Length: 261
Image 1 (cartoon, helix red, strand yellow):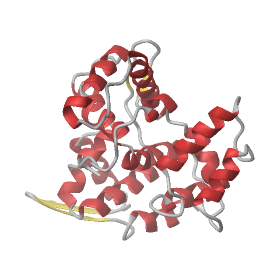
Image 2: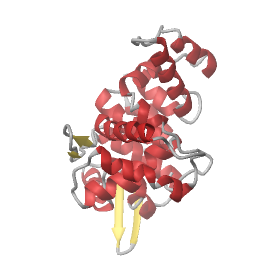
Image 3: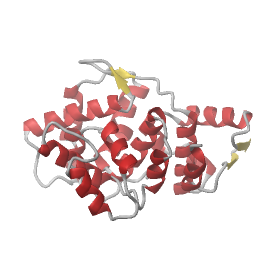
Image 4: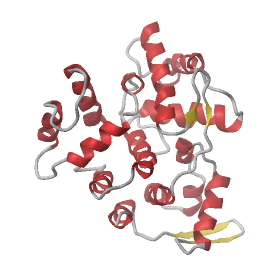
């Protein structure tokens, strides 16, 4: 996931819709794997899974879920975890991982803008800062068909800041600050498996830029891996520039099957 997927166009939807953590959990929990994604989403749209103040809001949430997640495909592990009762505090970081895999704006905003601005420089974050970031996207990717309006840019910027706060990365009111993110152990191990699935290399797993999604750097990642090694949750051997990581399971999907008892 470290490279940005060119097939996915930059859209303001993620910012304006937000993280939708509770709603997404409820949809996953009620998902029926015996019928198609279209049939499941139609049931959600009827209001039998979640309730909203208006039909338009319900339709927007349903569309957002359909754009981001495939419970019968690439997000099957997340579906299994929710159906088996994954606690919300463990669900959030895993949800962010899955969301960023399908959303270019979320991935780029956190990894390439939020991380260097708050993790390295310890800056406060305000909406105007994010507006400037959004205005740079046209030059960087050329993905937007036409420049966003001032109101769209403002709503998207405010939404991205709120999204980061909803996932536990920021706190505060007007000027938000970085939270020292204490990822639950099971969530960390799942994401460790998932990154290793992608890169198939110990060093690239530890140094992956994807850890920036959680405002974590390679030093912190290696420290956590060593701690898990001490408690025999995994095996991590380092000799000079050579490192070897043996994880509890062969893949993130296999770990998800064993993760919640």
